[in-house]
Amino acid sequence: MPEKVDTIRFVIYSRSYCHLCEDMRDALQAELGATPAGIDMIDVDTDPALVELYDELVPVLVGLRGQAPGVRLCHYHLDREALRAFLAAGKTRA
Image (cartoon, rainbow, N blue to C red; front, top):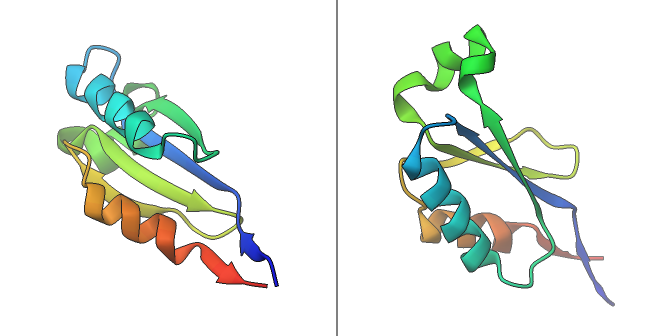
């Protein structure tokens, strides 16, 4: 049977002036390589609720798989082990 892989997307909660945010995006893109996944950057300063959640943690990486709730993977710097575990958990047999 072929493997079933849910659609995977990532959100980086960021700030426009944050070099760590750009570093995380670049590291994520490098780590994903040919893996088809979307990456959205959301500026927390555009929403007071996001500032309350993520203010001092920016950048925050959240992984989204299909319709499931997002999973906070890391903040400040890319946690490659957490990313790999998230990607591996999405692979299931059909």
